Each structure stands twice: as C-alpha cells, then as structure tokens.
Length: 445
Image 1 (tube, rainbow, N blue to C red):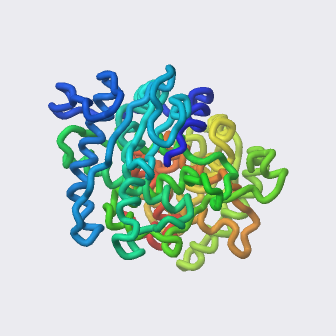
Image 2 (image 1 turned 90 degrees about the vertical axis):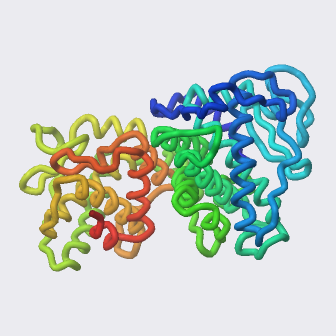
Image 3 (image 1 turned 90 degrees about the horizontal axis):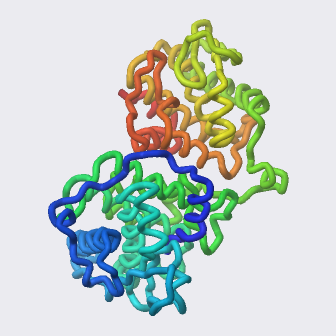
C-alpha cells in the first residue's frame, strides 16, 4: 500500500513542495457533484465527491483495460470503499482496529478487497499542497494493488507479480498503473475527470514527496522507491500503458534506491560542501565529456570553473566564451536548498553544452537544451564506472529529480531557449540519458 502517513508529516513540516497549479479541472458530472453514496461512511463533502469521481472512473477504465491483461477475463469491481475521518472515533475500516490508524493514509486491504482513505488528514492536504491530481494518483496507485491481487494466479507470471514479489517491485508496478490512468485522464478518456500538463506535474510532485527516506534499502519490506524510481515507474505507465506495467520484473526493472555505505555518509546525507563538489565533479566531468568528444573525433579542452558572473550565460551556472563556466550565488542556494547533486546536475548540463560546442553542434535553441540535460543524465549513469573518481550517494538522484521538477535551468541553451517547459519533459529527457546513453542524447532534435 502507499505509505503516505509518515511522509505526509514531513511534507507538512518541511514545506518543501513547489508551488504548482495542479488542480484537475472537472467534467460536468464532477462540477455537478458526483454522489459519493457508494463510498461507506462518507460525509458528502467536496473531498468525498472528488474521491468518488476518481474511484468511479477507475472502475470504468479498468473495466476496459483489465481484459487486455487477463486473457479476456472480466474485471470484478472491488467489494467496497471507505471514507474515514481520522480526527474522531468511529467504526474503523477493514484491516484496522481504529480510525486513527488511517491518519494521513490511503490503503488497499487485500483480505477485504476494499480501499480506504482519510478524508480528514489526507485528501484535503493533498488538494491544498498539490491540487486534485494528487488525490487521483494516490487512489490510482491503491487501485493498482487491487489489480495485482486480481491477476495473481490468473495470468502468466510475466503479467502477475505473485505474492512473493519484493515490495519495491509491487509498489513500482502500482505507480506504473497510476501513470497509465493519469494519461487517460489527461487525454480525456474518463467521464468525470480532466487535467492538463500542470496536473500531471503535480501528480508527479506528490509521488516525489512520498518517496522513501534517503538511505532506505531497496530490500526493505516497506520500500516504495526513491524519487527517481517512483517517477520512472509513473512515466513508464504514462507513456507505455498498462501492458508495459504488467511486464515489470526484477529482470527488466533496475531500482536505483540504495542504503548508505558508511556511517559518515549517512550522517552528512551524502552531501559535499559546494567547493569540494566542484573540485571532485570537475575532474570527473572532464573524464566523461572529454572521452565522449574524443570518441567522436572532436578536440576537447576542459572548461574552467570560476566564481562570479559578468552577465554571460544562463542560470546559476553559465557557459561563457573561452570555455569558462561562471557560477553565482544562486548555485549555492540550489546546493543548500536541494542538495549537492542538484547543483551537480546543473554543472553537468553546462559541461554538456561545452561538449556540444567541441563537437561543432549547436549550443543555442531548444534542441541544444534538451541534449544538454539528456547528456547530464548520461554522465550521471556513468558516475562510478571504472576510471571515475567520483561517486553518487543514495540521495543524489532524488536531488536531481527535485531540481528538474522545480526549474528548467538544466535544460536551458546558451541563448536562454528552453524546450522542456514541464517537469515531466525535463525528467523524461534526463532519464533518457540515464537509461540509454549519450549517443541517443546527441540524436535529439
């Protein structure tokens, strides 16, 4: 189930969510109010009406999708849904002994085949923090677990994880199913819900916020994945549909979440001070991008990193004439606010622009910005390879994802052009480099 409760408390106290307009805009049935009478213990509030619309659209959509995964078998609706007010005593939903066990949470109970959600400390908080699409993604994730339950023993193992699947794998598949449903909502394939690009970004922001604590072992029986893993699963479902999600296995899915290797790394959160990061990364970026340029028969001279700005370049790190990378105080702000690899991702994307210049490729225009971000992802995947003198800590990929959901700086060309105007597109281009490598980045148009 989606472990929202503990993470939601962090969200409320840290205030780390970006200000994004994620509200889903409702179709006529939701505007008129979808009667939540089929949801047990509802109070008829707007929050229950939204949840009812999501659940009803999920039922209808999975009624069409499920036979594709189950050799034509019919989808059997869930046995029920429960709205819980965790702020007051009342009859607890199945799989719990009191209403306060549901505080800030939503879950699927396999034994009773029901979904329950907290209308007091979950749904309104999600709506206030991210918008309505966050409620959609949370309930769609839980519905994904109900689909997994129905597929067990019914279809070949390639489409059914089985009861012994690692938790992180089953949670990743549920995120993937949620992504598929959000695509249907975005594309107008559901009767009661609609959302635009901002709503998709907001749904991803909710998943990013609900990532596991940094340093959680992927083998933990409560693991859901880090931000990179969760967004990757969501995007795979959004782009590939439920068939892609059903094929997820440990053989074709690589999870990047890892535990801290040393106590000192855990104590520092894996973060280096900015001057140390620039020194360590500078040498390693020279290794990677110099090797890439020379492999393409280009001539490479490593950029020189200098503090202070004279108006050249874009963002917190600017590529200036003469192969100079100039930084300003904004880079320290990124480093302190989001973590060392957020600033490292910006630096890598500027080195990527220098590599494009060395290969006589454009550094201006939207395509150059996409290529630079993608190459930053390719570099990230290569960190720690033989010859690399730099390594990633467990939280670094999450820091990169958090940067990309908030800012387009790493996807900006030297003339300020930005192709990736949504967080979804920026993360997708970064992932392309991580997953496929530099040659694919150089082919972007």
